[in-house]
Image 1: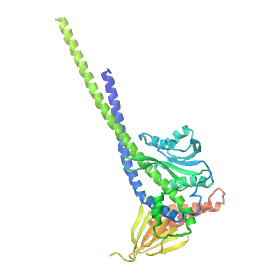
Image 2: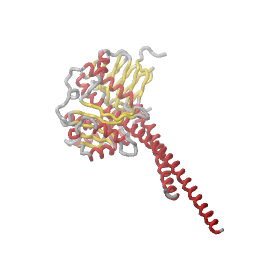
Image 3: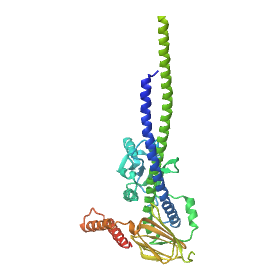
Image 4: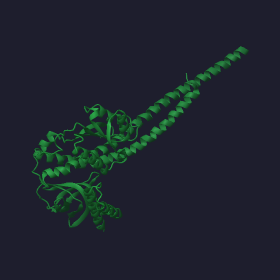
Amino acid sequence: MASMRDIKRRRSSIASTQQITKAMKLVSTVKLQKTKARAERSKPYFDKMYATVTSMLAKSGTIEHPYLKPQDSKKKAVIMITSNRGLAGGYNSNVIKVLTGSSLAKEDVVLYSVGHKGREHLLRKGYQEAKDYSEAIENPMFHDAKEICQDVLNSYAAGEVGEIYVAYTYFKNTVVHEPTLLKLLPVEIDEADVEAAKDNILMNYEPEAEEALDVIIPKYITSIVYGALVESVASENGARMQAMDSATSNAEEMISKLTLQYNRARQGSITQELTEIIAGAEAIS
Amino acid sequence: MADERNFELQIITPDRVFWSGEAFMLELNTSEGEVGIYKRHIPMTMIIEPGILKIHKDGELLEAAVHAGFIEILQDKITVMAEIAEWPDEIDANRAHEAEQRAVRRIQAHDPKIDISRAEIALRKALVRQKAAQLRG
């Protein structure tokens, strides 16, 4: 059995770790609230964007446009959104798993990474990287999403990549975050939505639908990427809050276990001392 | 009482719902030129160019700077999807002025590495911002 001093030392070290995890939990709770509000505020924009693009495609289903048909290149650009910091439970590894577990072959993937954690992991595994935007994840701006999209779309237009994906964490609610791999280009839109949109009134376009598509599709992609960034940040803080919460309660449990052990050891040593004294006194008399 | 001639207007940006309510007329700059829209316009989607957006409402006039995005017009509902929208008092006139200088210099530099069309957009944004900033009461 461990000595009393060892137990005491261990207990105080756990107590100080607990203080750290508790503080981190508080910090991420506040951050979660902020980022969650932000994700919710930007929701109307994406919903509208999706509805508009769907209804546009419903009416212009037959037009030939590079954004709508598969390209020749086998390469696939993946915008990978993870965090810059760890201690967020399974947050980062879940996003990585969603990419490594997908049907995309390692050799075909070109990474556009946002977030150090996923980047380092995948580079170590031998993935190729086109560009790193890790600063953006600290406080994603619409401008950042625009920059990423411009780069990715340029290489798509140049025929360097044939498909574009984004790997991020969908923020369903405070406790449920789903790692998701989403295909951005060529655009794939739910058939049911397209059917529903067909019934709407006839929409006119100025400039012509083809030209308008040229402008609106990149905006659509940018808005998805921005949405993915904002939701990932919210998920990251949510995941960290949960991880720190369970770390704090685990520490609590360990402390109470160690306290019990300590008290037992203390009692044991007192009993032993007493027995020794009594035995000694008996030996004298 | 709600005016019969008013339509529902929503201006949405990626960060917030910028403005939403009823309006009588909406003016803004599109890729096809400046337009003014009343209720019962034919359904139409247009691309927004940097410019001043004007909302006429009960004799009042609200003005804001918008850059890039598109607008969807339905019979009695108009949605403006702006990438950036700012009220005059949110604009930093000095910064806009600096941005203008920077853009002008880039355009004049004739450097093949510089993307002229991007610099031109930046210049137009800067000019619109300064114009909007002057509207501040």
